[in-house]
Image (cartoon, rainbow, N blue to C red; front, top):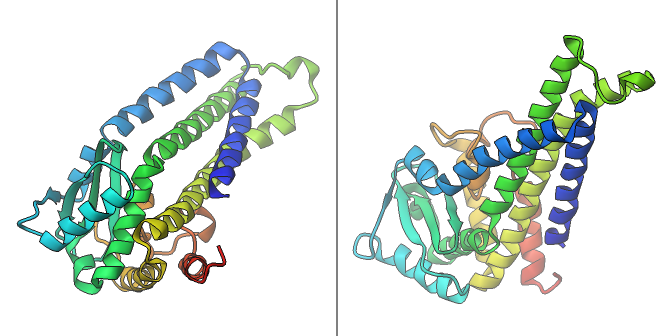
Length: 284
């Protein structure tokens, strides 16, 4: 169901892209903007693992250094039928985790030192299974495509706005009846695109919770972990966490700050926990 929702949301974003491009006029200009945004975002996608791991000073670890963590990742990767990802640890007291990598063959799971202090083995395995699900579902690719469309819609809307301000003409100017519609769309479309992008991110989190529960076989372990992580991040938000990478973490590392719920990259923790309880009870 969440996969279907993602398809619908991506379709909505494509419609916004076509509408805004149509206002600017000329398929060539729209295509140039799209290709520019595509190149920029896929460059980030290709090197995303190195960028985000460096940003959070994550260090690759071995089995000798963190035997329990390494064994859990290896066991769950086998259950998920995934290649063994690289394992990273961030020296950070805020408990959290994320997965990155452009494909299952080039993937990594990173956890903070804080998460290993407050979660028991069952809870930690629930978190790891959730992150492996992101790798299995290729959520980094989905997020990159969404970011590409958002970037292009914003860029085209901005160019069309400049053209209108400085005497340019849109394709429909000769008809003279759509000026206010066009201006409204140019303002609303980028905002709507970002909202759709956030909705896609939330949908992928629900999907990772569900498939992660299947991989670990312990949905209540993940539910308990989410509860602990949410409370801990409210009390101790992650220092130096960036808004551009917040969506990658299992719980929002910025949750201690006042973010609008509408633009949140994560579903409400209460809803995620309730869904996991329904899975455990066989109601999902």
